Image (cartoon, rainbow, N blue to C red):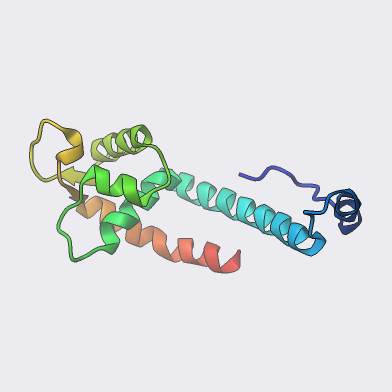
Length: 141
């Protein structure tokens, strides 16, 4: 998240540019604007998911499991590779999603990283319900 609401003006950035050779006023201003817009967009998405009882991470797991129709199941390690979150966060997320009925494990295995899992019918139904609003938010942002 980018928490700065009151972004520096072009003049403020120019003040740094006079004393620091590495400051490009236009690029810095553009980057700060992009960070602010992205932060607002992420907050809006998080509110949307929360209204439906999901976290952003849970939504993304559903997306990963749903989007690759060529695979019947995935491993937790594969999901970790596709998300920018730690393995413990993915593990906790998957446990919560299993408890809520959004994913199912296909086989028993001693090592949870090696248990194939897939999206459940309830998880797919929820995802498909959320997708129109998700795309509306992205396109409006």
